[in-house]
Image (tube, rainbow, N blue to C red; front, top):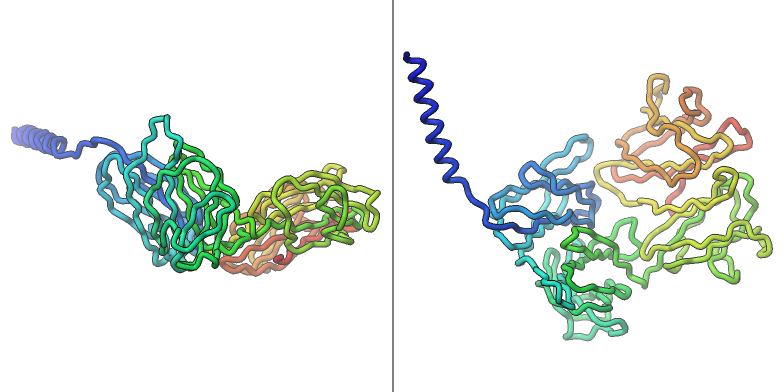
Length: 448
């Protein structure tokens, strides 16, 4: 009998305990909006979590999507893969009692080893559908930049002392403003000095019934201006570049077609002055400033505008570095455009490879520790074909040998090519045809 009585007693206690827990459990009365922004330069993707549930992976200068959660107590975590680690580590945590109908933005800054968390809290903005204005915040998230003044004016209006919307330090933001929809120019200047312009946008068209955030970051290697500004849609949780037209986009040209004639390159129609002359096989230019928008890119035989080799309209994105590679793709000399990711990530090295060897076609790429054989190794890239944009992938800091083979083969057609990588390094490579149709050359592309 004793065991039965004991079990009955335990069941009764659990029932009472369960009822007590159920009655003590907090009851949600509403929801709040939650997101995070990554302002750690050189950081890898940072995973933003509520308790153990991921709310998104955030690149530098990016934002997570906006999530809606009950007004309860949570601990928010930030996780990242540190140097040499394949798994993510919690680098920061923040407990918060969430209040209904509020809007929370977590700003993670500092460094990966000593992060800081700043919390921006505002009431949620609700639009009824009849408004002709938007809700706009302007912030400062550039860690290396001192105080700034902020102006938002109609196009053609110069900043005037005393008319700034406010002065911001890192981590500050202007409270949400109701701004009429229309065209504006955003300007950041030195404090009290409107003549010292740090950033000046082109014309921004702001639409009504949206909640937006404009903020300035430290630039990275992908930016053409000294400072990088993003516009974030706080409802959708999206982020896009705001270009400074004082700093034009650039294009870098690479000639990778072995039978392509020596060429001149033009960016005007009619053809006037070439931007590149005598572009020969394996020639690689520096970054050449280009206007944004649709640009006519024309290759002619060197010194002869009547012999057009390629005539192609290309879209130049404002505020970006672009790369154009001429390669023989399926028997036609073609421009392969790309937006090279030049950003240094402090925790990894990255290798980028493009195959332009049309005589050989698809290839396998092996990356092995220096001195090792590829006999028991697997390719890091399988059947890399001619034509696609460069493939980039992370690698550790190490001494490597690179080999190129035909697909599924172990006999090298190029290599070993030595490569010593360092954390934060970005290594770009290209595979060329040679006069031997059974071999290729693997070469590294020098920084611009």
